[in-house]
Image (tube, rainbow, N blue to C red; front, side, top):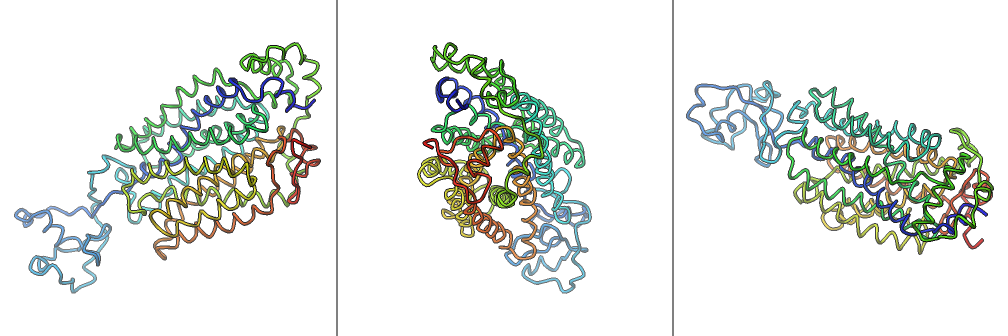
Length: 518
């Protein structure tokens, strides 16, 4: 008897699994509020150079003061980063006349004046992260994802060694603590450090909740489990737009999106540890107790009588360490890691560009979250019909659609989320239980590296305006194409040990795996 048979005896998908998945939806709901927070935290409102006070300006209107002190762009708008060294009074007579002396234009000398009609405060307005300092503004997202990247390696290893639930608790508590401290930041350096630590802590939530949920459901409902929790990411995405609309100060915005960690910590009381992991670590009594609880909730009253502790002991598996991943084909790993980089790179590249689609930033954020839900429902049907591999490949390739705008571009955003959703499901099915979190940690490392690089690509618009979008699309197509070389996992039992990987062929690029029918 293997674990899948044992789980079916206890109820492969019943009230126990539904409750567990719903509880795991809480951290899934929290994640996008931090992962996509940069859109509002670091928003740059309209601004221009601060103009020194002169007595001669007393009788001038605000428009006239700007006209004689701030150069204009070809489209007639005032420049954000330059001013005249001396007031150009002749422009009052002929505003279309250009300044005769190019040397009269200089960079801002006394700071900037910001339009506060949309934001009370952002980190850009608080620390003047504009113009020459714009790269520091974009770097805040990179710092966050650097933390997530480091967290992927740490929590991947620790959750395989100390358990899913305990590391989920550690992740929640650290996320709450670092989130609150970052909301109280008094300097850019303090914010950069605390956001990095917040990203590290939140990675535990991102890394653990999907496999923990899937390890408690049978083969037939694995896709449903993955899609259900991922839908709450999209709901959190939509709620972020609402919260950011209501809370316009960045300090209080950070505080507000961090507070849901409190009910998440409370909900962990009812979240069970993975019985697969407990058996893999030889903790038979705990595994048997959780399985009996599962059977009781699923109304399988005869489970305890049929499945004794001795039977459970026969399902015990050897443990794994960090390095046995080397037993899995290096060819396979080299194919999979760039693919995860491409998924995150294209997703966050699109998700952090909410000003280029002709809608207001709040509406764009809300629409982006809304379009993800039908995309995920479509993927639920698709991955069960055509398999994980082709669904994953084509959803990532079609992410390149955002090279166009409006409806087609928003459809591309849906494909990018579909690719991300499938990636979590696909990854969890490829690695054995004893190394699943380690494997996810390695893959998440590559994914978060893509997330860290994505915000910096926006700076390439100074070289060629379409270059960032072209880069995101090219990477999506290239990395999506490599997925065709990976194995299929549709209807394949979750591997428990490295030996299972070798037997089924999941560790090689040409292995199709063993189906449940086999």
